[in-house]
Image (cartoon, rainbow, N blue to C red; front, side, top):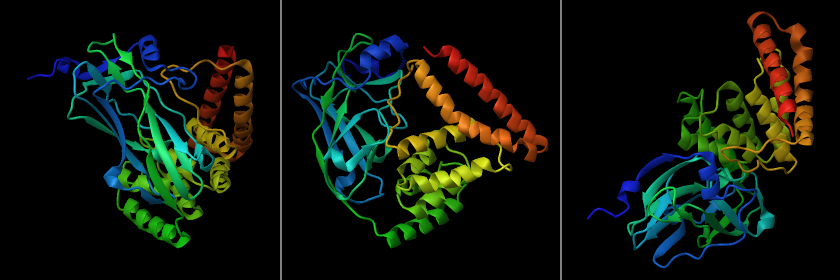
Length: 340
């Protein structure tokens, strides 16, 4: 027999106002939790039952949803990042480096007893700073009561905790892994990060040897849509080393600057200072005048270095660099006009 809500299967492009209300995309998550309805289950489990890791390894959990009655749907839209709130205890041993990501696209799937499972990579949002034992739970807004969009009541529920044991990774072990992963990447088209299984393992490594390799790949190739190379730079412990290598490349008159490279250096400096990447919503609020002034001051330090390098640039390099500077000036003026 067809499930009563089977006609809901598929994707819906929501207007922002609808998505904003449905998923509670406000500043921060609500403190109040919804009671999980009888017969509905949300379960967090370690992938393949694994709970022991070395620092710098990818940590993947699986979030499962099921219901033994009709009248519920789950949003199975998958994003590149984390749309759930990750709760870690003890909190002093972790850094939530990236906020949650909300999108205005949902894929509504009827919730059945057979269940639906989604993967969640802890490293995409959380850096575990020290070895130890940690309790991890997940707060999610993926389940809704109802059978028809947009008349759905979205629930905020927290799944059961999973206990993880994190041990130090010996430096020699990391060096061996970097060598092996570098060899594997070199055998692929490593101009981008599409070799995900290998690239993810390298991205999550934390030491200096890995950091140098990650910067090299970032500078000589391009990131893919998952942003795994950007994530890799964020996960390295030695941000000072990465920034030094990136700054040297930025100042080189042989390299044509671009705004993505500039944005990455500024983001890394924020992370170095303990400032996380904020929550991301389909429509972000406008910047205040003070926020715009601070952002432009940060960018100006880098732009001045490019302006100073112009006499050393020639031909197509000089023309492309001037185009970059012209666009930055336009963006500068627009940001000032749009600031509240």
